Length: 186
Image (cartoon, rainbow, N blue to C red; front, side, top):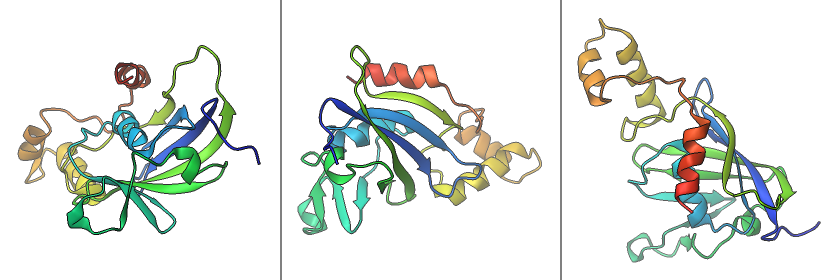
């Protein structure tokens, strides 16, 4: 098997676990991207605000931002590259964001491709549905939030509409806006 390098690109499908219908993104990132940088990229493409802790779970190994209070279990995401933890097509791992709400994302390596000269990476190729708002209580809290918002007779309707700042379209997905934010982070 040819080892991925900086001249290769990983095409990843990122799916928010438990979301029905599925909330997902398809992205391409350089194979030599650190897991920390991948975390930042995922924040942009999913629509999160980087306000909480995160970790990648690859088999039985955890990568994130090590801290003495967490013990020695967490390996440093800044020093591990995507190509080291998921070098081949069909490799899978988990990205967890916000340990309180427990947003778990299944990441599948769909392809490892040669980088196209002149193309800027990372890039989002597609996706479906809006990311849930931060701090809404995980996938179950998001389902309850959507239920309250769409039903004007729901006892929490007004409170939830105010909490999300007016409107929330769960079907919204703006590929151009996501790629613009990816370009801005370079």
